[in-house]
Amino acid sequence: MTMFNQSSKIATAHYNFILVLC
Image (cartoon, one colour):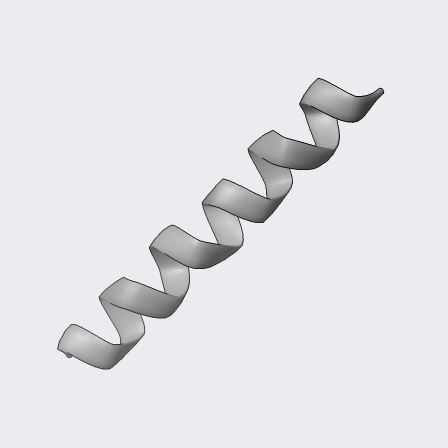
């Protein structure tokens, strides 16, 4: 479950980073 939670946070961070670039 920890692995899934970590990957979820990484995906959210990437999504937020893309929003900042746009």
